[in-house]
Image (tube, rainbow, N blue to C red; front, top):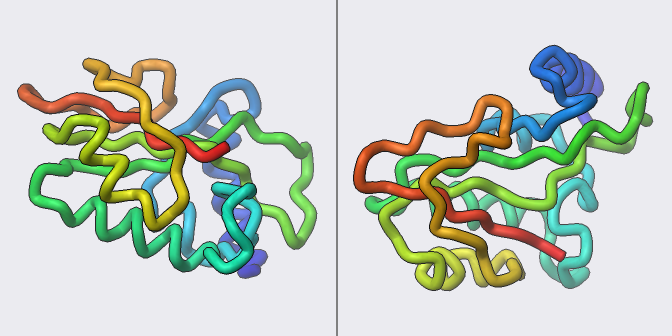
Length: 143
């Protein structure tokens, strides 16, 4: 765990209201310096490491019909984060023209649950990604 990045990340999320609301962050913000295996998709199989989840999400973002992928952080659970903890996320916001079933197929290698959506926006998220005309939000989740 890169403790300087962890501290900076937690401070950023706190400044954005993360102690009381869900904050959306970029994949880079979430994964850089983060080696906390249980911070996202904690019930995934033991042979599916955090790096594999990261790779699936980065590949999804590169899909020509995907505009953005943001990590949806849960409300911050600690006043001070232990050295081995990273803010938890139970899902990601995908901004796309793809139907949810196609997003599910593209994220199956990360052991995701059936996604939610489509929806016109993700207004409940602080720093929610913009949804351009002709696109929608699909929520990808882990149990």
